[in-house]
Length: 157
Image (cartoon, rainbow, N blue to C red):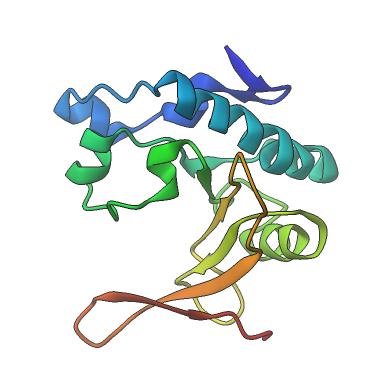
């Protein structure tokens, strides 16, 4: 099943953790509808702009999978509303190019520069709410000296 022209459901729900632990990572019908809107409004425009395959490192996470990986209980991944894009090792475009293109061209709910350094995020998190206004919230994920993740408002580098 395709969520958009270039994104399959299989790609969106792929999880090595789910496979290893025997966790069912099938979306509910409601989450599937959210995923289709995310694919149409976020993934597909990125794919069409760059004209190359875009690698998703994390898409949908069932409640059981999200708990197994220590994800936030309010994660938009668990609603079918978020993807993590990681082009490292996949050629151009890179994570930085994708982040700025999303920021400058798409309506999104949340966009996060995930860790990395000032030149390149380790991956890009982007979400799209299926209903209502998008927040256009831009954040940067960092770790404190104890390794705990925190988020700060995005500042242009």
